[in-house]
Image 1 (cartoon, rainbow, N blue to C red):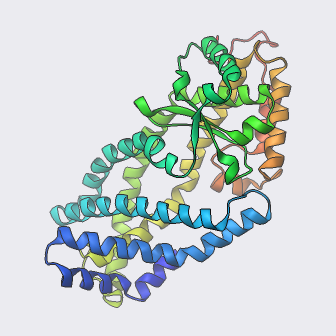
Image 2: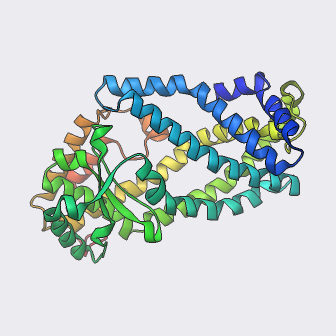
Image 3: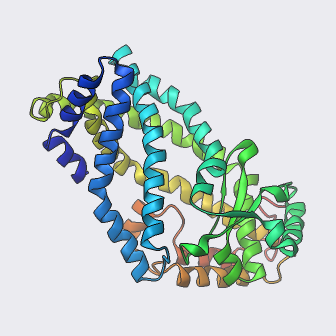
Amino acid sequence: MVILWLVLAWRLGPKYRDWAKRVSCRRFVQVFIFTPLLIFTIALLALPTDMWDHWLSHSYGLSVQSWGSYFADWAKAQVIFTIGATVLVLILYALIRHSPRRWWFYFWVALIPVIVFALFVEPIVVEPLFFKFEPLQTTHPELVKKLEQVMQRGGMDIPPQRMYEMKASVKTTALNAYVTGVGASKRVVVYDTLLAKSSEAGVLLTFGHEMGHYVLHHIPKEVAIDLVILLLLLYALSRLADWMIKRWGVRWGIRELGDWASLPVLILALNMVGFVADPIFNGISRHFEHEADRYALEVLHGIVPNENQADVKDFEMDGEVNLQDPDPSPFIKFWLFDHPSLPERIAFVGTYNPWREGESPKYVK
């Protein structure tokens, strides 16, 4: 937010707008000059804090990525982001000019296929630019057989071709696994660090958690809920941006909302409403992560001996390796955590046992 205020105070938006207009009188050409200039400026101003973050991760042993690799990834990320941002800015300002009062709604409608497309291509186009992936059946065929047993128990058929080992150890020491993609691009990814440091039971429980996201349809559910919230945020953004331009537009050299130079105002307003909405998005995510923990215990019951204690041990190791806060404050959990806190997860997986109480499991009968 500070960087965006500086961009506005220095009137960089009007300067880049005027440069773009000198090159061409066509708005379609102007957007491909103005937007990359603005995005790259913001990225450069943010680079010192990004570098500090990388240095901090290095000093605590969470990152092993060299500076050369870091800057290569930074450059690739900027190119990808700039291409996507330029297309969105083109759509956004066309809608603002078409409907100055209801552009926020039409832009929300336009974002739906864009978000779905991004979710589809991200694991097959973007992620391989930053990490190497290998089929899990090639690197750990014996583990795939165990995973197929888990899938059979849960009544789920995930082809082995959609299970991948990510070579994360060249850049990080963190342990992780995740589910990503939609439709034909949907897949489960396991870090090679997790495969190296965790027990077989721990890997199976982690896979059970990610499988839970598949089976319980968490990705489409969360996307649908987030889209509803996004509609409200875009409305709030439009009102806030209008107020800011009326209040400071002359000082910033911004003529109206349809002016290219208003883009930093829109990005700043988005950051402000997004910051306020963070607890909502994170609360939704924490709920789905908690239910995935429950699913993992249920689907691994009878396959992993003493699954409760195995899961506790795995979470404890994960907390030590990833340097998780063992006692976060309630406020920090509420505002920043997109997963339940480590103590909460350990308490749950250590005690959840419906079979002992003669009760029926919630998901895996």
